[in-house]
Figure 1 (cartoon, protein in one colour):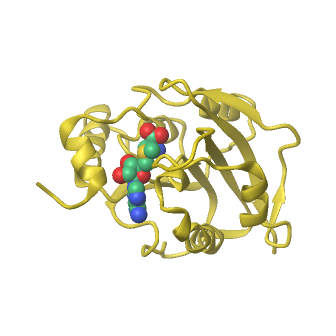
Figure 2: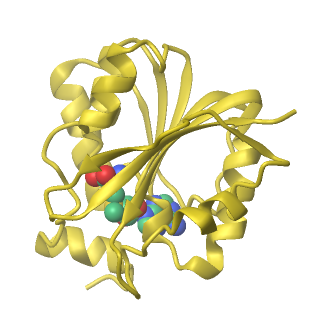
Figure 3: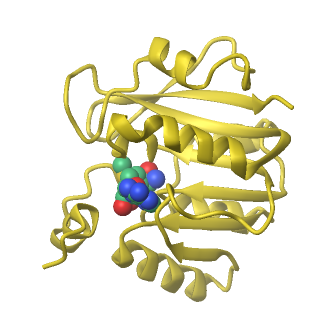
Length: 193
Ligand SMILES: C[S@@+](CC[C@H](N)C(=O)[O-])C[C@H]1O[C@@H](n2cnc3c(N)ncnc32)[C@H](O)[C@@H]1O
């Protein structure tokens, strides 16, 4: 058995985070035209239902996950639909794109990381984006200590994605229900120059 805890979970099917379909938050952002085709990075993509939908809608997607099983499954799913996306087994804290991109779709990768790593992760997200690039973020709300998934307290998120480095575009974050009974808060942030 691998020592990667995420791979272990995929191997035994303990994937309570997986909706089995792309998120209603992504559907809304796409349908409202807030999220428009361009280059997009999806960190911690898991089985990548969102990656398939983004590829179907014409985005140039680069998707990353540290666990090999979902990466292999997503590559196969893309092949079966004849859609194209770059899918990599990589650590979000190490990997760098060849050049900065327009958009990041962050669906609960942050909450999967130990909070001691959040500052380093915020730096990665900031580095990956072009100036004025957008971060579409789903912040997990567990309302409890410990994890993963770790609770993404919104005051803590405002401090982590500080106003000096990010413009918070969402006035009122909407709740996105999660099959496990908890929910995420949907926010759009823009990288400041
Ligand atoms: C809560 S799951 C979310 C998966 C997917 N975004 C979804 O919503 O179904 C977190 C994902 O992040 C991945 N992950 C955890 N740590 C990572 C890291 N350091 N680099 C890349 N992926 C990571 C896990 O393997 C897992 O697929």
